[in-house]
Image (tube, rainbow, N blue to C red; front, side, top):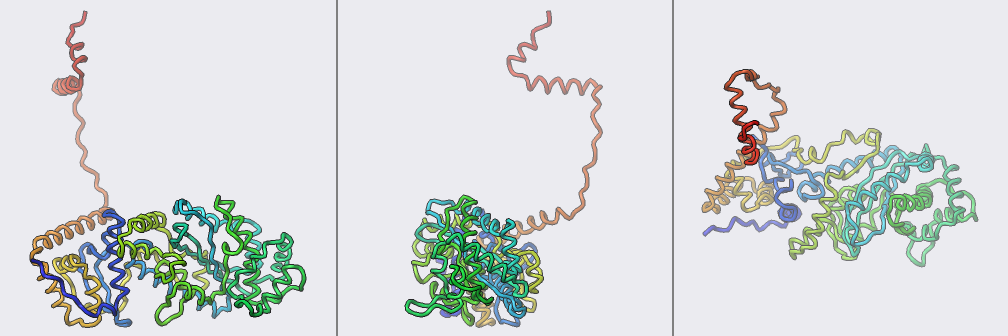
Length: 495
């Protein structure tokens, strides 16, 4: 009888890591054996050994020598690594924008939908509506008057009572020195003549609770938009009001032009100051350790959020948690639909030239980020094929990393115990290791084929068609291809 694998009582120290690997296992089952998640952090890179590395700077452990899928929408393990890299890039961009005195606004763009709507079609139409927003001449004139430097856009999907809900987040950077405020005021006054709904001003995060006074900047802008007051002074608050006031009708028109239902003026186009935090933290009931949940987290880690309020909708990883906890087949179908609709979609989209302006650097693909390893790291141990097969057999990747951070000296005993626990399956482990090695070598050979110069096969001399032997061979082949009726007709003598 196979003995149980070793158990470590300090799993709570790395609860998030354990959950990521656990959810990855459920994602493999939900997405099927032909999906790339099947090999992620399980199959070895061809011609490399599995190694446990310890980052000298952070003291965190990592696994090297393994394939990584790099799918931020389907794999919890790769999503955590890639999203953290994107968050650091965005955090650096916002710090650079602050040093350059740029104004940052955070937008949330939503559209109404029903449970029967197809997610892939919704995502395509939503992306088209977002591109249409500033594609025409009026949109470009408006962006130029506001001094828009460039946006960074992202997509998020939650699940609620109306099904899967795609919506967009955009960080827009404005240069105050390039703002043409008189032109903006002229745009506001001309737009106010069409009498937009009062709901434009109803739901702004800067509004105080019921019974308190409105901010002076809001009162000044509202009186100007209604035609009863002078033009307001330029400040970040009035810039936010003007941006939402002018772009909410444009967003509604863009959605209708792409065949979507018209969003309402209150929720369709929501604008906040770039330093927001309170509403989303209160809504989701979470906050990253050591830092405040800000725009960089919302843009890159929104799909990783763990809900605490059912009324706020579930994130895509909550669907996997429902599969893990309850075996919910509906959640499995929804997660499968989400992964298919967002396959190879970029997590962040930067406008041209914005990364260079903010000093972020060259953008790496998700695959490249997932394959990154610490620049300065120590090799704690190297696993042979049988040891790694035993780790995979018991799904002990998270235990291996946790032990390497808490007690590196116990790695050898831990691996020996795993192999000993699987002694009855020794032949199977050896077979898995042999198949994996063969598959890795074949994969490496196929990758190297494109680098080997092509060599044409030697030419063979054409047959001599005038010889009797060749003529007899052709007659035999033709006779073999004849049908019985054709053979009887051919046997009838002429005349």
